[in-house]
Image (tube, rainbow, N blue to C red; front, side, top):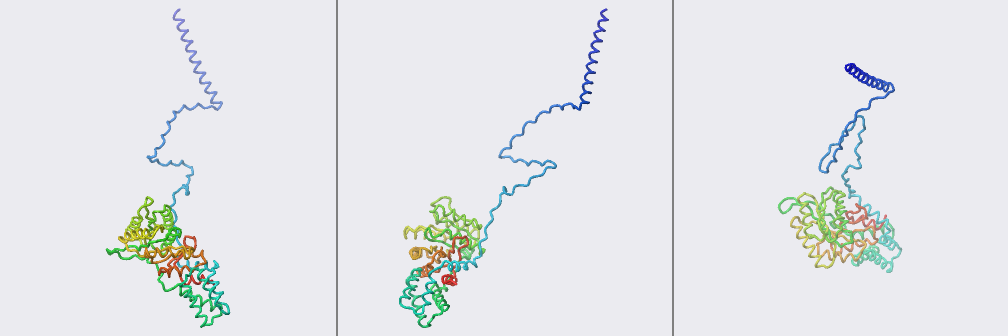
Length: 399
């Protein structure tokens, strides 16, 4: 009897197992017929990659197949600054002539108007003399011009306007003196030890005359003539002077030697500039100086020290005095002091086109006995030109 119950239990278990297997198969078959698919087994999530540190280099991500690769942004790429190419020097004096003529300068117009009168009285000659004095020609040169004109008008009996103009032109040109050597000494020359040394140009003048700006423009003149240049920022008492000079030089690829601190020894900066120019084999070193005119003794000491220190490396070839043409006769006081202290070899007149008193050219040459070599024609970067007496006089008289 016990054996019978055992077989019954075994049979029930077997029936239950078979029924479960059949049910699973049927369910799977129904899901396939309904379009279902078994779910994919879960995949373990990968841990996030660590951020790269600032000191480690990371390789660029490989582009996926079929995906367009973005071009690098040109605007974001670092582009070297484009150096400026200064204008040629040759055509600059034509602008001076045109600007002087358009400025309505009363000098040439009034002189021509007086000389063209039918009969010149003493009052007419007084008016002529007054016109020249107001144009800052100076008392001495004015007397010479008036006397020469009176003689020629009396002897030649000039009345025709064209003849009068030519007469006046010849007298003005003679007083401006076209025979003076107005060339700049900017050629390399042998040094004491036989090696080539650069020309050294020292620029002096009081603050406010446009001295530092003139040096920047002079650098452009030299670059336009294919000269290599180094600038020396020896005006260490005006904080902005070195920055201003460096900005001018960087535009045309000219380096500036400067001190790291304000109030440094100007002679030391000048010496470093000349030494660097000599080491690099440049053609010209242009040195800026402080424009303080506190007293004659202090100015003499400072400029004397700069000169002594510079000449240990290379001789000075030019000392240029920058004067503001609009100051007129007041500029002659400055010119006189710097002429006695610095041994000026040439004059740079700035703002010449902004004044009707062009006679300052004559007066300052007479005062110092040195020629005007460069003139400022305006505020543009290339508005500095070699002085040409004939173009200047023609500009004063107009066409």
